[in-house]
Amino acid sequence: MSEDTAAGTSSCCASCGIAEVDELKLKECTSCDLVRYCSDACLKDHKSQHEQACKKRAAELRDELLFKQPESTHRGDCPICMIPMPLDLSKSIIMTCCSKVICKGCEYANLIREEEASLENKCPFCRQPVPKTNDGRSRVEANDPVAMRYQGREQYNKGDYSSAFEYLMKAAKLGELEAHYSVSCMYQDGLGVEKDRGKSLHHLEEAAIGGHPEARCNLGCEEWNDGHTERAVKHYIIAANLGHDPAIKYLMEDFKGGFVSKDDLAAALRAHQAAVDATKSPQREAAEYY
Image 1 (cartoon, rainbow, N blue to C red):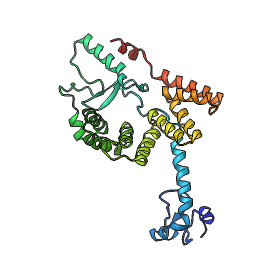
Image 2 (image 1 turned 90 degrees about the horizontal axis):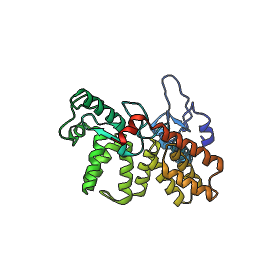
Image 3 (image 1 turned 30 degrees about the horizontal axis):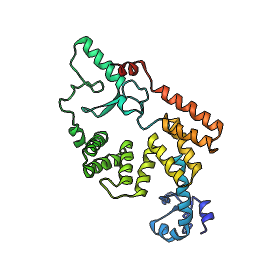
Image 4 (image 1 turned 30 degrees about the vertical axis):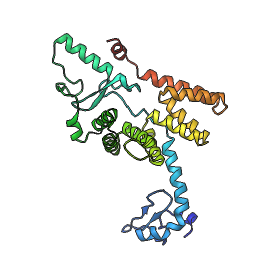
């Protein structure tokens, strides 16, 4: 059966042509959505005919996912005030008792409440007493991906790159987006693992898809260096829409070079400012002066 015929006959096996009936369910190709098969044997027999179209469609599907604008950054909302978290990591804190990352505004509001009422210092989220030891090992042992990522960064700062990579990779496998970004950097620099550009880009893409603006901006730089200016600009616009300052700088430079239209730049600037404004609150501003 030809590729065109198979693609247009999704109710039939692309290899043998058998139709899907109640007792026979066809399975889609694991890489694309073009064809379906009645058995693994048919999938194997049809592989040589389908391989080229499969790779092309798989790349298209990956790009659809990669260039979709995330609804928010990878940091999400503060679990207490439900306001988007700032991209500046210094404006948030992890609670080692529950591994919840909260904004400094909520931490400040809780401290003021406790001071005024002479209360015991407790976690603003889980309301448990703040642990005397802050290494978060109990959360690591519980396979908490956030705790694993923090442990990985701690080992990285100590220069133990092998242990750092191990913790960060475990966290990445559990879907921790900041860990994906860190693993990408380690593959790129060859720290704790052999250099591998392919794997570095894979983890960079996973982080970017999840809303990590720095990973997104780095992808833009990679595409730019490879001569793919249109793809690079798309990455910069997505990052700018998430409130990423460096992406705006790149877009300004690209505008001067004629790679970005005036309307696209203006839209990115408005979206960037809206994203930044959404992270502000009176409590967070007060926390900066506390």
